[in-house]
Image (cartoon, rainbow, N blue to C red):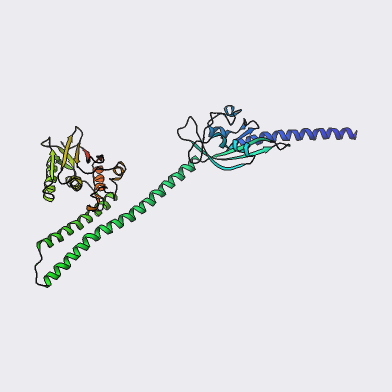
Length: 394
């Protein structure tokens, strides 16, 4: 009787143990389904035998679609950390089956047909062996790091921009110091010469005074450019918009250029007597003068500068064409940034801070317009800007 009771108790304990193991397994699967990382189990033939809910969300496939899918399935598309397509032999499961060793913290990109951008994940893969030391399955877990990766890229970009800004500022200060020192040095030397001549009872020659005036004008221009950039960068420039006859303004700019360069040939292809545009007259005069000065610098003495006006219903375009050496495509992309000057055989004869076109761009953008250049090496360059005509006739 005691033996029978012992058997019964033993059978009941075994049944209880089996029930306990079954519930533990179910609870374990529920636990896996509640995890944030995706979990996929590959069998000995690399086919998927289990996946949790997070795996479906990350991979974009249902559990039914994942089950039975092998590593060699052509629908898998992964990327390396550098964005290059990953060959099948580098897939985490493939590497574990080949090496029988685990993989930790492998960054992969997951290409999904329903998304434009890849999902990025940190992947870990662990092999499991049977009693005969045969690799029976591989457990793969992967955590979505797309948001973190995007944030890191944004931070890296912001850091690069900040570092570039610091380098640009340092370069700007170096260039500004050099350009300001040149006229100051020349001015100081001319003053010393004048003082010595006066001490000897000699008059100051008109040529010396002209050179003094030239250096003073150059210094004043550099200071004005520095102040303009500072005010434009801080948003402190307010336009004084009023209806202006653009043709009359262009003629005034050309007359000023003729005073500075009386031998320069100028071809103004004027087809309109009057074009009224709402603008800040002094600022647009500044832009046109910059275009003309650059054209004068880079155009050979025996060639002409051409000016054209394209009057359109809603906007007007001004074009200044030189006959210089032209500008490379790479330099064209940088030309309207600060501290950029055209590269040519004339480079050594030109000076300045390289701020003129940058200031011009800012002024035109304040007018709601656009600015640019069209150029081919050996064929000269055409600088242009366009501004809207809204309100000029009111």
